[in-house]
Length: 416
Image 1 (cartoon, rainbow, N blue to C red):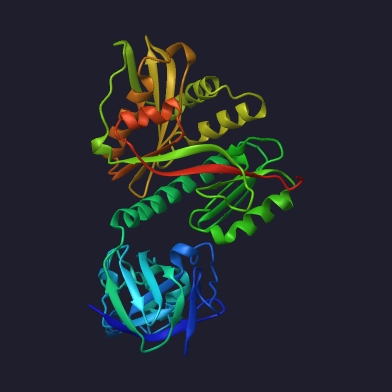
Image 2: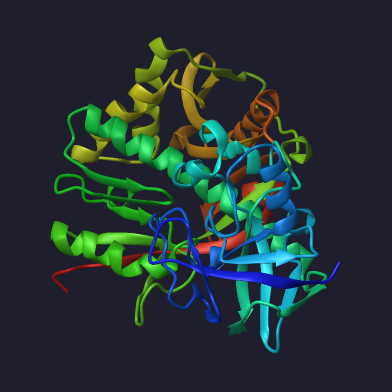
């Protein structure tokens, strides 16, 4: 299914992207091209957008005013059904350039002018699997020109390509959960400056000093926006932590290295606590105070952050996607755990067991209970993070979770 380049398109931002005679393609895309929404498009995993003329012609035949470049693709191809290619598929273009298909590009509001009644879902991979735009990474930099041949090659590492897609899903759900926690704390009266833009989210607080309320998410997808993250904390005048799977800047020191785990919820092992008088149940909103107080007590959270965690988690109980479990020993609460479900991903969060009940297998039983809940919520993957070498990490591995990545916190102090 080899083909050729029909048109090369760039713009200073927005659509349409207009044809050019040639362009150099680097790690972050085509020279001379920019994205109007760079927290949703662009970055090394979405360096180049591609669309097949075959798809354009099908969409146009349905009465939509689409044309090459009008929906923002950088390279319009001919002879290849791009949307059918598996992630990781490589495209050797011209004399040197090599791209790797990363994943489909979701329709956005910027391209509605190319569709009758603004229905840009016409090129969604979910509804029209053959007509989606596709993103690609740059494996080997090079020039691209109209007429260049395109040779389709199989993935060099299919498992790595699948892992990248999984991590993108995990990052998106983690961001949703974390921003929700920040906003719940704001609603409770805590002063937290929150900025959320696409796949970038940052928070800073003068009162709450821990990394939980002073961190930036999105670096894995958008390492090219590191300067924007640093500028956020420079303006705040407060230290902040960037969550990243690599050093965000030269000399950055990793703190609290952790492993990201994932599993099919149906493959998670069952686990019963060591004592038969320990029971588990999902709490109702009216029981939020008990759950929150066990969390801060078991986690040894003190000072202003203690109140912030209690008030924030209390507000999240009973809200969309949030599920909270409590473990009771002879009717007394001894452990808690949270599950956040979105986009068919179940995020295991905020697990804590009181000191007098540790060593009884409660953590593993809470993992199994949340996996069961995730199946009920039609999740296809469950995920959790744990400090490298910790008891939590060992529990996750024992329950059937596999490590898929490692990340750390990188502290930036504008005063330092």
